[in-house]
Image (cartoon, rainbow, N blue to C red; front, side, top):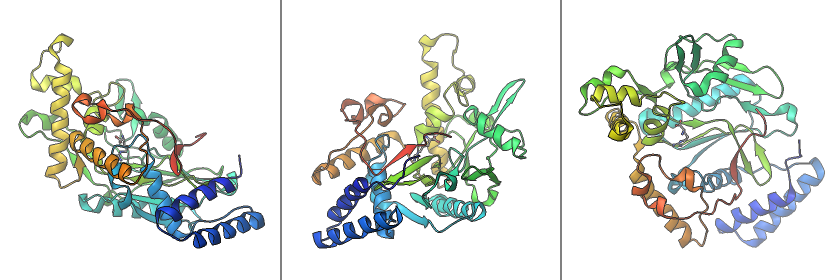
Length: 360
Ligand code: ARG
């Protein structure tokens, strides 16, 4: 475990922050002195609220896999650095869910918890996202989300009993240091979900599909100026294809294409009929239409790609290079019908940024 507070990283971030926000070089030099002194005296420094806010926004702007970065400046930051206990942390996560959901008018939000000075104090949220569905191994195959098998088992070992259905929301698992993770059931009144219907295919509703409104990624660490925030869940709103072309469609996830094709009456005996492609499009129409009907914010992949073009133009106007991971930026449905497909991106990692944890 390295000491997180690297002076060089700190200075690089402070330099970016102070120059992008139009501060004077006197102010910047003053802050350099403070930080050097803090690190020399106590071994670490702390971000001011303004630094934390700007740093989190920069981490979003630098997220090479994210197509939604046009909105990086609108990120709402919840400063939860003073919280100590698992209970307090769980309460803050509930507040995040409520604030971000906003009855469907989703607000991009991040909640930032205390960075660990010692590994023994590391705060970790073990869930992949704050709201996600359980997956159960049964004799008839997996029920629910196959991506959640491991965490579901862990929750069960810790005493949780799910209903055994395809869309059971997992409890939150909060861990401090190497203590035993604590379980917190999310009050169902906080969880907004959308039942999926199709505007023309009436039989679609019989599939009894649904998805939750807000994807709140909770298993990444936020790094700003050498400080590692090991728990910093963040959310935007969904792009339809994440649900319709991946979560519900992947064979290793809900694998719904054969069922969608069946209610559409398609010939699934030959790949040559392109039944998978037809089913995919209708499933994605169902996702977008259902979210819209329920007043839940969502973006289609063509609009998102146009927004990404505007993000690129803004960045260039400000003399900044846009870094990106092409294979993540292109949507999984009709990629070549978006301008992103026809461009090249350098996948250089710029900090602040979000990273996967080194261990689980
Ligand atoms: N792809 C993930 C999912 O389908 C969510 C990742 C974050 N997505 C977002 N639109 N901010 O659940």
